[in-house]
Length: 236
Image (cartoon, rainbow, N blue to C red; front, side, top):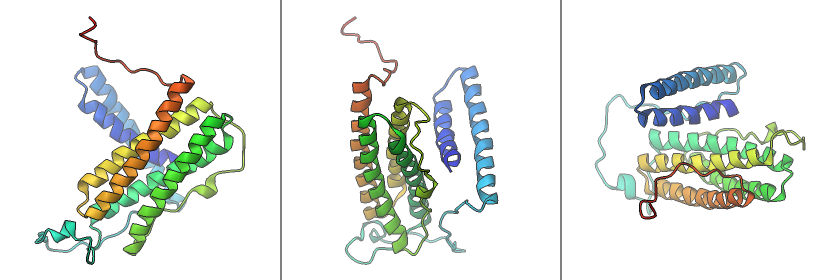
């Protein structure tokens, strides 16, 4: 599940990096990264499917004829009976739920093995936010009689042995929340129900608070590297 989810992030990140590269050798490098990520992704799906662990997104019966939106209530009606989710909305909610569930499994394990108290406290705060996201978006799918991904909590063992440094645990956890803001933004941009847009905005704000706490802790610990930055022309 972890490899499956992380290769999705890799495909998105490498594609974005490719689109911003101009040097031929750098572009070739990212093309190879994308090809490698696709191969790993396909293998992860094959393994999950063979073990009966791959869960498909909600299924929709597609109309044989295209239909046009004939009223603004398609997006704005929140007082009366809301329309059913469309395929893009349900797909984005399901995909983001799966990412939140993987992140929750990671943070459960990280909290259990972290030896640094501030790092454990961060994991606890992050878990509260993730649980809230999972509850809200699961209830939306259940309200439409659509299934949700299974939780991975049971995959976390009772080990208390720290397998990596506290720094790596914290960095990886913050990485997941930073990615979450990106995916909720994409879901918000493609949603056409105003209540779904509001829920995505709420999730982004929750992730921003966690990411701010993460950044402050990383700086306090001296664990955050400064990226290359533009020259200060005024000072020069």
